[in-house]
Image 1 (cartoon, rainbow over the protein chains, first blue to last red):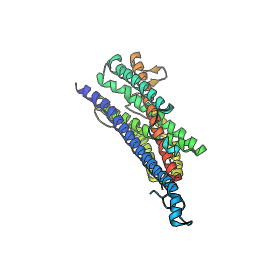
Image 2: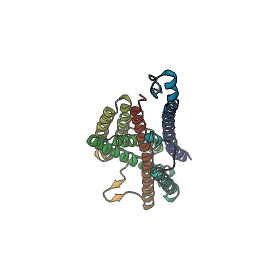
Image 3: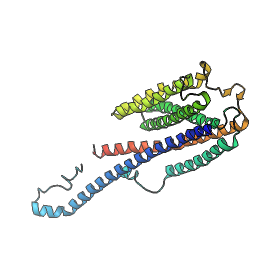
Image 4: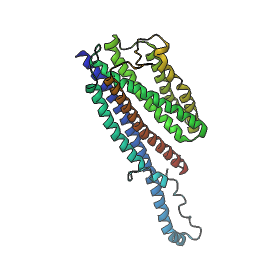
Amino acid sequence: MGNLWYLALAYGVIWIVLLVYLYSIARRQESLRQEVKAIEEALEGELGAEEETDEIEPFLTLVQGEGARPAGQGLSDSR
Amino acid sequence: MRAVAGLSNGPPDAGDRLQRVLLGATLAVGLAAIYMAFVYAPKEATMGHVQRIFYFHVGAAWTAFLAFFVVFLGGVAYLRTRDRRWDALALSSAEIGVIFTTIALAMGSIWAKPAWGAWWTWDPRLTTTTVLWLIYVSYLILRGTIDEPERRARFAAVVGIVGFVDVPIVFLSIRLWRTIHPVLVKSEGFDMAPQMVQALLAALLACTLLYVYLLVVRTSLERRRIEVEAAKQALGFY
């Protein structure tokens, strides 16, 4: 019986080490996914802001005259 | 934008399908190998059931050697091409190699207690394997200390190539020095019952498949991380 305890312990070690490693990979994958999502959201926000500025450009020109701000200027730095 | 979008959730591509096939094969062969180690292989006359540690202990050690050989190849390929995909492969393989060396050392130590009466002894095989583990743990630590990607990859490649020198030393240690570690493979073949040899081969195959699966998953993650880094740099997020 004593020997069986060592056998169980040895095979238990395999499962524990592998599960910890798989968990660490899953965590890193999730972290990368979040990072990609943040980049996509930032880019979509930026593109949306540029499109919105394009739409109001004629009105800006009317209100502010010919020297009005070009589309997207001042909106590009999303950080 | 498209490169970044390609990293998000989408329909499964060829890489995902390969991972699923590998996972299925690993689970099937793994279960068969466990059955062979615990049921099919006969009970060893002297040590009894505890000898069943042997199958996956050797499997883990073999896989660690294979993993460090891939680190060596990845390092050579990186130095020749400067392509960071080789560095990603080497890093992933080193990480998995350390995992399998940890398993081999832990299982060996647990087996040593009932077989030799001590958890640890500074036997040549155990000592050289510990040195091997330390070399590749240092490899991983070294990578964490260098910020510049090209420099990090170059240094890591050199350490990965030089570190591989210890692998043949570990393998030959039981032949070169006096040791209490048994020599299994002799000039006339395996020194054990045929069922034990078959169970060992099944464990070796299961561990190799597990290594390939983990390598595909981990390398894919590392390559995606490199792509995200490149995209962030290109888009001015740094």
